[in-house]
Length: 290
Picture (spheres, helix red, strand yellow):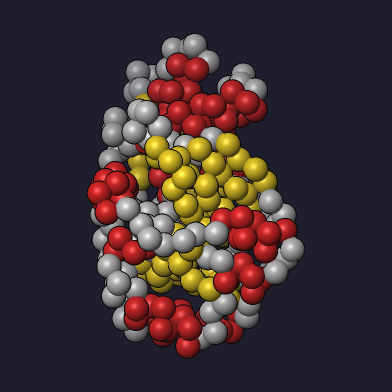
């Protein structure tokens, strides 16, 4: 059987670190949004007998045991207590790598969804969510998608009303410092940035697009240095962005726009200086079978 899944990227509209567990994992409260920038993940169980887990990707990412898709297959069959069959995963990347957009997590969520369909849904929704949380912090949201609050280490998902019609411009200005390194930097330096996640939630529940823009924020942003995003912010403001901020632990910057013409003009201006620039729209779901 062969299953094709679209795996949407995510952005963090608001992100705060609320504490640290005894095991060192950081606790978050974040408002997340799926967007229409998607990887395409194809999973099949009709590979050559004895081939095991095969991961094929059109980008320079690990395709063996270090790949999150590979680990997801192992975790899935451990959860269902079955021997791992011959499985082939093909990933067509559209989401930039190491960008704070959840590309690897989206791929993992897509693999889980495909495997569950191929093997006739042996896990309950709660079991799937628990399994997703064990694989990675953003995987549960990437499965559920839409607009939601994620808390703890990512497994507590609370859906929110859909975003008002709007456009999101993404700009990745540099290569990313690893997520682990950004958390270590946060532990060392801390953050003075105030992130009002509850205000963001209120704005979304009120369908207040200007309020959503006003409350965008991320505790990781100042760790990149005061000048890191000055030029990007300037260009976004000149094109009437309602708000802007970092997604994930960076380095991608996100601008919120009410009008597509303003967003398109912003993309054109950013592309004069940066290579990785994207015009996207919110999606009301996470991974879905194509």
